[in-house]
Amino acid sequence: MIAEQLISDILPPLTLKDTGHKALNWMEVFKVSHLPLINEDEYIALISDKDIYDNELTDSPLGSKKLSLISPYVTSNQHIFEIAEIVSRFKVTTIPVLTQNGKYMGTITLNNLAMKICDYTASQGPGGIIVLAVGPYDYSLTQIAQIVEGNDAKILNLYVKSVPNSQELNITLKINQTELSPIIQTFTRYDYNIKAVYTNDSSFNNLYNDRFEEFMKFLNI
Image (cartoon, rainbow, N blue to C red; front, side):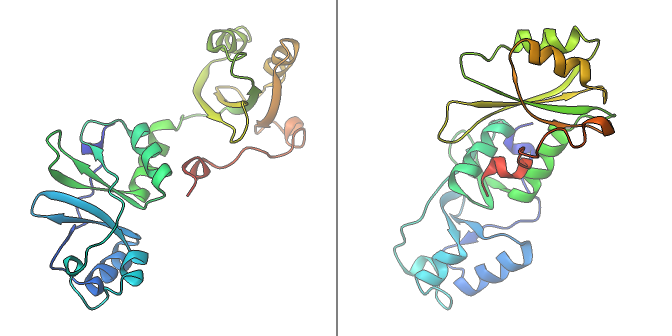
């Protein structure tokens, strides 16, 4: 899924003639803290409610002062995972989409992005989750897949996340089985660090402490 497929069909951009009051009203209506500021089809910046208050623009046109604003954006063909990384880096609730020629196309909201990522990564059907902790040089997708498939199971989904201030990688596996004992035993024999297990199998419900963060914390928002 790419950026142009995620554009909101209801979120309007702001113009230089719009007042801060109008911007704040729109932010409240659409439940966002950032809106794109444009001049015709030229993207200028992403303005926040904080920018409006800090620059005392509540009753003034947004173009009445020279502002120092962030201007993050994505292009129309960028992948949804790239978009998520940019949203996370800038800590914004919307992200403008530009054409390859730099013209404003529309805006993606954080809520819509999160929902689409959940749809994109969700695996239907029952199963269990194993979280492995490995070093960057110990990560072998081939070996991990062989261990799972050697126990007559399949990986439905796999997600790799770097641990901040560490070289450790957390590898989250969605397996198509709830009985994970044989897979866990095999990972242990291969010296993998099992960080967490999530399954409907009651024998494992209390085996590991919950350390796996929710998906939205990946965005750091």
